[in-house]
Amino acid sequence: MCNPQSFSPPSLLSPMKTHTINLKQSMDLQPDDQELHRWPTLSEALEEIKAIGKISGPTTITGLLLYSRAMISMLFLGYLGELELAGGSLSIGFANITGYSVISGLAMGMEPICGQAYGAKQWKLLGLTLQRTVLLLLSTSIPISFMWLNMKRILLWCGQDQEISSVAHTFILFSIPDLFFLSLLHPLRIYLRTQNVTLPLTYCSAISVLLHVPINFLLVVHFKMGIAGVAIAMVWTNLNLFLLLSSFVYFSSVYKDSWVCPSMDCLRGWSSLLALAIPTCISVCLEWWWYEFMIMLCGLLANPKATISSMGILIQTTSLVYVFPSALSLGVSTRVGNELGANRPAKARISMIVSLVCAVALGLAAMLFTTLMRHQWGRFFTTDTEILDLTAIALPITGLCELGNCPQTTGCGVLRGSARPTIGANINLGSFYLVGMPVAIFLGFVAKMGFAGLWLGLLAAQASCALLMLYVLCNTDWMVQVERARELTRTCTMSSTPLPMSSTISESNTKNSNNKAKLEEVLCVSDELVKSTSLETDPLISTTTT
Image (tube, rainbow, N blue to C red; front, top):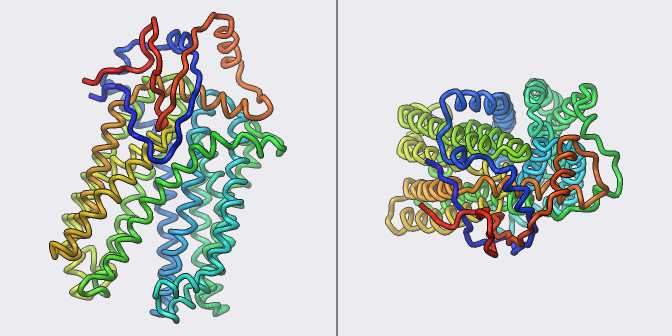
């Protein structure tokens, strides 16, 4: 059973911070201790599955639609020829490492703030956080754009082929506007999802993907723009998605409660956002970069052409499977954030338990699929016997990786929803680069296991990541997380002009301000509140572990 205890891993990424917590207020609102220790009933579990499904279901469909968009682009690159396919693939990999992973990771920093603000009915904080995040991403896109302008020089310095580098450079030059469109699109998607608005994004994604095929045909086949046409089509599709989604926001009036007129307020109070965005970005980048590192190692094996091709097939497979735990992660992040913001720690804990059980089921399904399809799956991509043999050997290992990856990804969602991204970044850093990388290098090259050894290294990383994540989650003190949610939303609103809050919250604050509260100084280490002095009342955080 998940028994809430304190957990304070050493912080590798964040400095020590100090906060002041009103302990009397938290003790008055504390639920029955038994509620924070028991398993959910069947009816509670089904209710939570339904609540998560309302968010994760449409998000899964959206993820599959966006995955199909990427496949359409790859098909048109293949239509242009082998050189264009190689150059486009190299450019997309470079863009993922240096740009898309950074933008996506930074955008996720707004997720806990918006989720908890929505639960606390602090509507204006949603709009203010949206504005701040857009400004953060747009300002980040500028230096990334300058890096992309010099991509050819960087690739040649890394020893890449001259001709392929030239084609890749052309592709990424026309992809630069995509950075700025994604800087608008990512925050808008999170803004809607944290308010449990997900179906419109699915509909808008479906329309934009349907238009993606004729746009590619128009630019690549009709106007014969070559690889530049494929890049422009990707940018155009993201622009269509943003225009459709922003039109929905405007005409549905979903923005009215949270609308904040642009002012100097969006230029102030960035500390809370950056404290969440930077570790979240690091966590996302560490995981994304691992797969690029695997491709580099494949190039050092005996038959690099076959191993790199097989690795490409397997990464496409894991990307497809990842859509499902990723959607579950986004759903539970929203649910946990909403419940903590609404001061319901027991429900946040139930959401965590139910989502982890669902994640294990997804992992088992993925393992079963990859094991049963290991001899057939590769034939969808190639007829080369050597590539098919390598793929068949590695697919069962890939399935085992997903058995760890699904709970780990879902656990990251719980950590994001409870505003603890630094812990996730520390776990990813330790698991992938201190465990997985040495194991992959040792098994692949020293133990002469080759391609399978590299995937066993990933398996070691995923296993350690999942175990550490489960340990952290099972030792979470949910009363502390409620206090942190209150402190986070209070800090974000106090950093700017005071914003109107709901009458419930105002009345609660007025009532508590009339009580003579006892204050305790608390240290915040690695996004966990740790008691620094003794209290006459019950401790806010348990000091024993069972």
